[in-house]
Length: 180
Image (cartoon, rainbow, N blue to C red):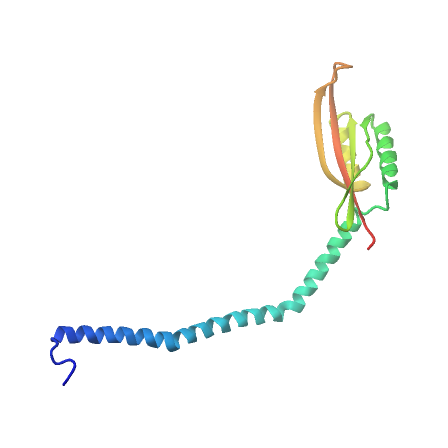
């Protein structure tokens, strides 16, 4: 006896379509999904191989960038707190020659990181804007004694003299590498 004898043409057609869908899903599950996974794996491996081919060139670029950064950092490296005396001598001489007043020159603050120390020097100077700007220029470009982290200009009325006063607060930083 035939299994499909009592079925109508429409029911046989539905069974044929349903069987086709099940067969297509089974075929995909058995072979096509493995092919797609293998293709994606091969694509990932080809990308990694292309990056590995460029590795020597990239290593050279990174080393040259590292040399440039080391050279830049060496410009701000100091041997110790003797640098504070050099900064004080320079700033006070500049102040005398340009009629500026050195208002504040506190001790250096030292912040220690993993393998280096950051020396921060605060310099507060009073005077005309152009002269203050010349001092900042001298400290940054002509006689660099560290990295100028920030400059803050402040205008206020001095209670003693009852005059308007302009001050520049200069934050100068240097680094010292610790021996390992």
